[in-house]
Length: 88
Image 1 (cartoon, rainbow, N blue to C red):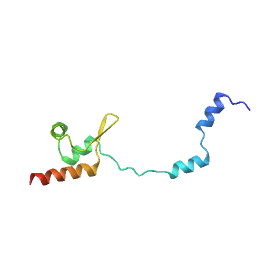
Image 2 (cartoon, rainbow, N blue to C red):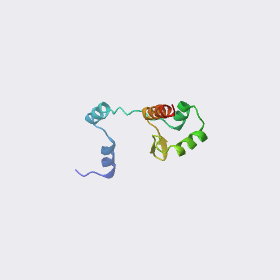
Image 3 (cartoon, one colour):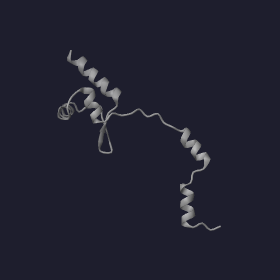
Image 4 (cartoon, helix red, strand yellow):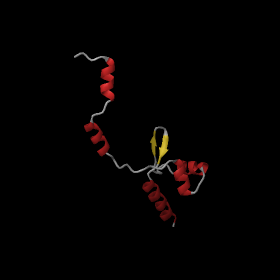
């Protein structure tokens, strides 16, 4: 049986019941990352103050994904607590 491009493309887009079961049952629990507005809200500062803070603290925990900064909430909280302890 000869397959043309349309039937081949259709076969690629069709999912078997086994594929659906595997994809639906395989879910990864990824912790949500904060965006810049989330960190600003947590720290209760504006964007300019936060940018200056990051310049002065290059070790502030952040990840650049797709050209945008993302922050792990637990790492941000731990960093802030460590800064508070150092200032005492």
